[in-house]
Image (tube, rainbow, N blue to C red):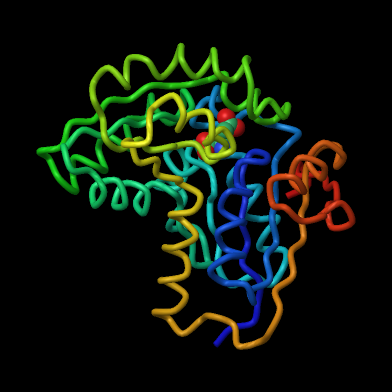
Length: 268
Ligand code: DGL
């Protein structure tokens, strides 16, 4: 048993897709979230820059006495986690492995689509990980760089996201995939429109949620789930709190305004 908080981070709002699942399956755990809103998007930055950001984000989370870290960011999981894993004292996971495992379990026709940021898709990590798990599966990938700005600006439904979704996802749909990995944790916020476009027969895999499930399994296996009642949640951002608090409250279906604080991430 371990009553210390779980740390979760992303470049912005996207990691809340993971927080939502953590709250659902581990309601008594305390959560400390960091959204790097001052430096979003990560998806267009070089791997060296992402590694630097990720080290700072982890240093910040480790300044609290946390028991576990979830990198709720596809870009950071692909570009940085393999390079820094050995340096980290705290138990840590990214989204890549649990998400690929879920997709491999889910597909029936052996055709998986992967969408993510430019950084994630260029890294080829989803493709490599799926191929390692099952070399017979076909994987079709596409970067969708405009999805993150849509989400960060609150365009979650309607004509504008619909047009951009059609533009990016038409080639993947035409390949006949039955499973689509939302390989960036921002994308589940566009889930409704993505599902409408892809059709009900295509299963969407939410990378943030899969990471939360994996975190629960790891904590349980190592006897580190908490034994107290009632989890708390605190949020830190590297830019203004307003937009994050407002959109985050809508997404989590919970008022988080009073629990969002601004920090200077460059100090870490
Ligand atoms: N949500 C992140 C991801 O999963 C980062 C998106 C971005 O900042 O470009 O890739």
